[in-house]
Image (cartoon, rainbow, N blue to C red; front, side):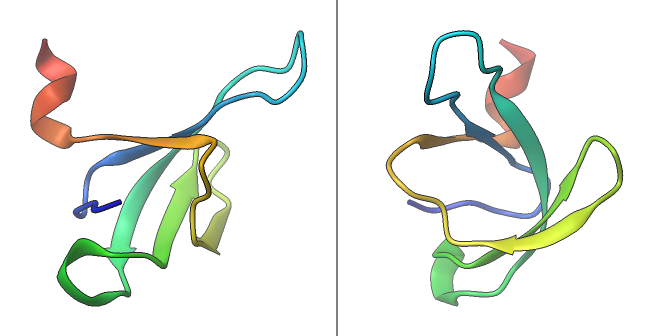
Length: 65
């Protein structure tokens, strides 16, 4: 998994009825786009994440399509 500043991480809900959680990558801590990432959630909360298999990267340029 590789992400860049400005990309979004989408963590898919694990159970029926649970919504996806979207966060924005504000800093790439790993080397060459690799995790961990500092992310900001919609409510302004920030965290450091090493995404698992339930996450997907939406690259900044992909969002316009």
